[in-house]
Image 1: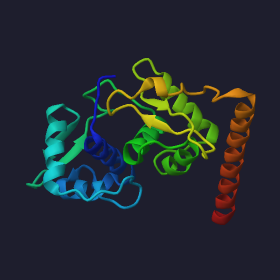
Image 2: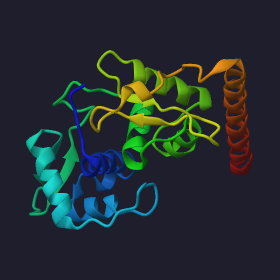
Image 3: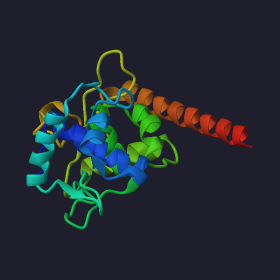
Image 4: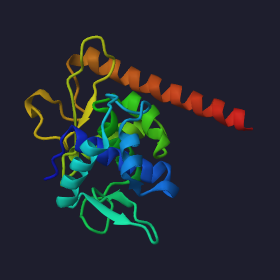
Length: 215
């Protein structure tokens, strides 16, 4: 993997991926729309207040690196932007819908637990259960053309370890745990299993409630 993004570039790529999926009728994005997407107060961490000049300068750098393309629509002088980061005819980086949803959320919000990703990435792609989220994370961490994510050591007071994307430079891999590794000892391993099962049951109950409500 040879893509390295700073924080603003990661936010821009994440926004373009998100809007391509959630509002395809408004995609590609004008500079104003892209700036508003970067400054959104929902589905973002941290929340930022960027000016159009800052976003334009970052986009110009991404265009030079062929990670974003600019174009003007037929009969319109407004320049709009689309990503060429992945799943495009211009590059070899390809993600499944589930992989793309997780990568997008990590670009927009930073490191997150599988449980957080399960609830947040569900708006971008369908996950059958919590287990599919973990399987997708493990695949992203083990891909031959990656790795694209890594598992962080579990922080005190947290039930789950967080996962971070690896598109923003070389992380301290010595401090990262390989996906699927046991944190420490049999007790932790059993706790992890119980927490995953609980998350799966909670997701199934929520799905059942939604189905009953729709009915």
